[in-house]
Image (cartoon, rainbow, N blue to C red; front, side, top):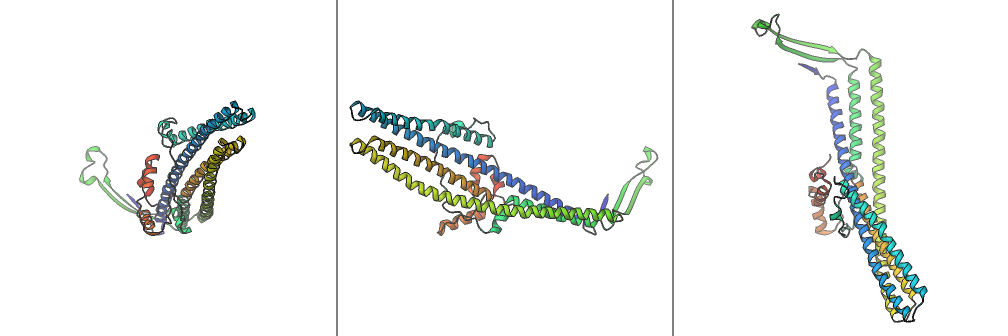
Length: 374
């Protein structure tokens, strides 16, 4: 048995360094989990958004096919021209041409979800082929103070722990300037013959005090100290860069989310107006008040606005996923009144059912996702 007498903190600082490295690895794992859940959620939102776009295109295909039928009937009765019918056929064909690419993208998104959940690409097609609306999103996001952000981010935690490990290694290197004392002990048996090995006189005991280390080679020790200092300076630079990048990513994600919400609100108004206009144009055309080209233009505007609204809703949802990722998987919901207090209390206590759902879909342990990192 050998025991090093840690007078100068070499062993203590070595343990501290290894513990910090272990904590950095744990933070790396948490970062991968957050990234995987964010990618899975992003793919799911994109799939549902594509399905909404598909539904919009198919609904407009039906409306435009009915418009074409009406124009053909009027043309047969002498109330239109072949030009009007050709324009309607062109618009219908263009609308139908939107459907195959959207179907392909939806299939790709479904394949991505299946692979992210550890299944073969086509394994979840039957479940995900059924269209569903995008989930309801929170109206407000409160990112909290910068210090709260830095405490949540796994990459910042990992960089800080590696900086702590590098700092501890300076102490290990500096301890080599002093002698290393070891206390040794030996208990055993020793004999010239096997039959005498366990007799009383064969017992052996020894206690020793050793002095070692490289303290006499001062030049080499100082070189190791300088290398440890350089490594610490490098880790400090990495930590500072990680902090700045975390703040930049968060600000960018929040700006994109805010603008996506504004865009979505405007497109909701535009879509409602275009639907009213298309309905009015159809009624006026049937009454002979306007030309068929006005109807086709109104229907084209409705299709465009509804498609843009579906894309905007998807961008808003994926922007929220980006905020989730930059905030390391959580935020405080800025809701007024008792509802806001209940949500804040649930967030504080770690009772977050949305993580249970994401954990079940991704295959991760939701309890692991809810556990504080530090």
